[in-house]
Image (cartoon, rainbow, N blue to C red; front, side, top):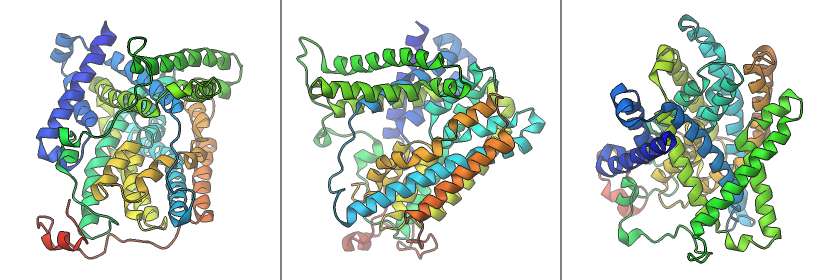
Length: 480
């Protein structure tokens, strides 16, 4: 019953976020997702004892739901076929997309390796007076670079291993702060770029996109095909059943992996989401071989992924308990600000040097992805490119392959935080080396060039409050 209550209140917070986004102009102007708005409200309510007593919502159950939905989201991603990008294989556009996806993916990997070192050093200096172990600082990249799902998952793994008590709460708090950074910094940055004419195809966002809901006239996109007769099995039930099948198989595969008496292998096996993604690829391959894939719709499967992501984000906010992290709030905020500034400096410096006519859009996408999730990055790109005429948003999805080198340090980092290895100097040097290797690879593949834009450029629109009608008529600029 507690799971159903927690799930229901997470849904209520999503509805609250949706309503507030539609009704409050400030939230619409900064494109804050309903999941983040509802999550913040849920976080406040969950830290009011009277609310918890009256509703029976369990913060621990919210945390469990986050981990569960995170695994399901990865399984759903694995079951979804990768779409073929139109025009990618030919011409200059294809080359630019390849360059952009490689550059952004490798830069993400570099930050993924550098930030745990920065976080560790910050907490070692700032957290000591508060009794906070420096190891908590090395969790920052799971939250900033990957989001609340990974933050909760890896934090729970460390707690389960008897290391870093409250690691899940601390890591989720990082993720919450990261989401706020993504939009509170990203939206003003996008507006500055629009005023300075840095966007390749600036257009005014539609009112419906700002509010986050479509009126009937704009409800043109389908969320999937009906591939099964509803009198037999509902099509959504069929897709969810495939997710359930994959999850059960994942549990058994995990048990087999955990039988191997090697610490590093068991650490990898403990990553349920990673094992689930691998098993989902196998299930998808079997569906193709059995000619069953024709009854599976990738668009509907993507909607399941989006649904689980929205619920896990709200659940992550609601799982944060001030009673756990309150004593460390000052070093946590200070460290997040330092890492945020470090990340922003990297994004601005290298984002302008990727090489292409949409580097500003890529920079915005990178910032969103480096502090929130890939959807956060796409949301920021849409501020300056609402019709997605540049390739930046597509490159956000294609950059995942280039991210892999940066994630190679995960097992070693977890081993260090569990006390099986030393963070300094061994794992820290590994992170530093992998981060530098990513930067070197960026140079080798030609994604470090001369700057293609500058925030010091003169303002195109004289005032942020001007309507700039003359610019709209000339199609050279359209204000946000």
